[in-house]
Length: 354
Image 1 (cartoon, rainbow, N blue to C red):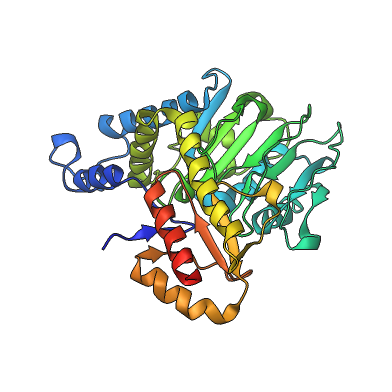
Image 2: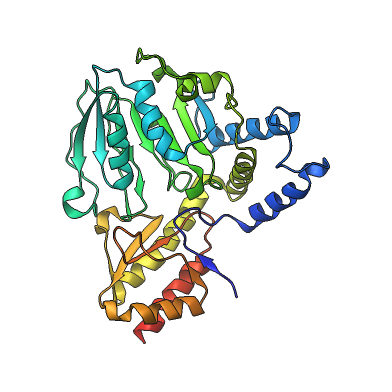
């Protein structure tokens, strides 16, 4: 039976990526060595790293002279503190948009380095919408936002226009939709949502914003040190980067971000249409702010929970239970999830209705 994987992360990856990664574990490019045992200083891995970094900029259509790509460790949670450590002086103020759990954690870390001003928050309604009418002070050091909220199923569809450097946590929707990536000065993303396996974090940074905080930054936390070392200041997570490269290659061969966005919109439209039509279910996110990546919904009658679980299990539907803090259901529609899996979930919802 086919399993339809809606897990929020670590998430589904393309089948061909699994197959190529599995082969590389046994024998990387007929070298006689496993990807798990090659030196991170070897020519083979240096080529992998260079191609991965170049592909990120190519897919995002960013200037190689302005931006640097880093593959680091510690997850997005490490970037919550690495961003203010590198960008925020003690006497300065950073602005944050509070749209959910991950944004709140980023805010908490930033407060250890300087003043934080929250310019907008949707906490008053359990983060089921994206704040709209907020202003970013022109004297702020930077503006930080979270583009997509996996727990609450909301997504920023219109980013603010500002002269202040924009920092964005794109962990759960990076490479999923066409954006003008030049409007961002630093993007970070834990790979395990839409880029690759857990264990590596992608950072894309405009070089000109670095080196201005006046702080004495520990080497391991200094973006400039990692840039100088080409993401190899310490031993990088070789297998996670290699698998991310395979996923980037797959995305390029699919037609790039524009092509995958079209498919993602189809998948989301199919599921949201059923949620809105089926009287047994209700969406939890504000309609205008619904995420294309993480669809959150609940049963109107909790007494149907067990029956729905049985139907989903019978159809091979996995990973749709909502986050423990909000309950209900969450279907993650990441790039590699085929449309047929979304149809299988819709069929399960219709079977419960019957």
